[in-house]
Length: 324
Image (cartoon, rainbow, N blue to C red; front, top):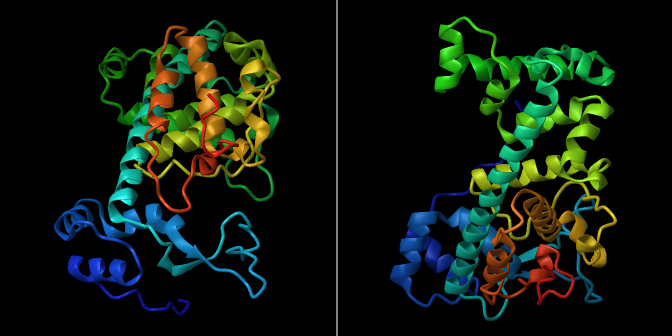
């Protein structure tokens, strides 16, 4: 076992509060701050005050990246920027929570809609299409480079486990009746990740059919979109911070008017602004009368004033006025 450095020593809430003060954070109300530290946790909140930590600069005054692999993350010192307050940081935490709930609201509708399309389009080919490997692209059906299982085999095993452990009435009825479970029933057990993997394994013509049910312009982008939306969905489901999240891969955008302003910032295709625009595009296709965009826009106006934190970190080019 490799040698590990010792863990940081434990600190009480009082000690943590004094540490924040020593580093320059203004604590407006000690009792409230300790209560929030107890409710949420120091480490969880540290992700929200991290941007408020003073940026380290070299002798010439230039900023220093944290690492070569993450040049967009700047190295930070321990002390806070002037004007950093506990209340403002906690307001940012609450803003992020409200934003997550808005994202989950839309993602639920999108997930259910896509599952419905997959069940309909592939169910017409075979009621048990999820077992038909002829629908799957060759590269996913075979093992490569020492793989013990193909991607298709891995997906099938995970899917079979979902069906075997499901307590849904529709699944239990089919098992009790010893009936084959059709795809339009089985798909009710799928999560966003299982659905995304299945779509991306399909042969091109089947993916094309599904994507065109939403919009003909999505043929080349839809698989990438699902991957990124699945990342967002997992972050939201596990209460992770999303307001300044960065995707591992750039979002592709079709040549449609609603996406004309999105690439205005080089960071936007990696940020939640791009995801919000994609979600709104999909929401318009599902529910044209949805007020989701206006609710998001209203939420963005509540963005708190926190040092080094602006809407630019969400991918909005101006850093101030949301382009939605």
